[in-house]
Image (cartoon, rainbow, N blue to C red):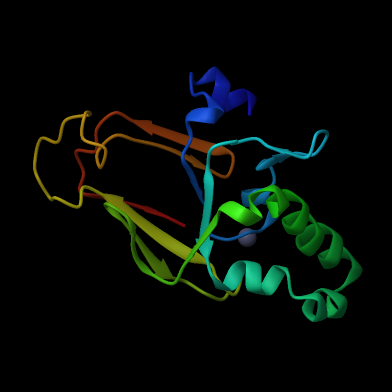
Amino acid sequence: MANIKAAGVDPADIEAVLLTHMHPDHSAGLTDMATGRRNFPNAELVVHENEPRHWFDDAKMAGATERARKLYFQCVREQTAPYRDRMRLFKEGEIFPGVTATPRHGHTPGHMTFMIGCSSGEKGCSSSRSCCSIRLQVGSHSFSRGSLSEQWMVLY
Ligand SMILES: [Zn+2]
């Protein structure tokens, strides 16, 4: 959160958090565990439908090792609980204008790759066009671009 604020981004301005999958190195940080409040109070959580189906399956959690129960299942449940009423699930395809999701299941049941680019394909997109003004947070790495001159960026 400190890095997001230091970058000049107000977490309340973030409208969507898109996860490739729900492992803790991607989902931890969604919620302030001291208060139980969303760190992104106005964001929807966007994730493949297999992810919550897997991580909220009590039978799968009971069959996991103790380490996996605590590190994965419990962490996902705690971090995403405040977003349960604002979780948008998808399968694949264009999930936002210019953002296309492709299944890469295996690492987790709903692991995805996202291709991000200008859906219009226009050259010289200005930063005023929402499809070309993108600021990304991927795990602990952030990428900021006022304009995407390349057509696509691929995230894993
Ligand atoms: Zn992972």
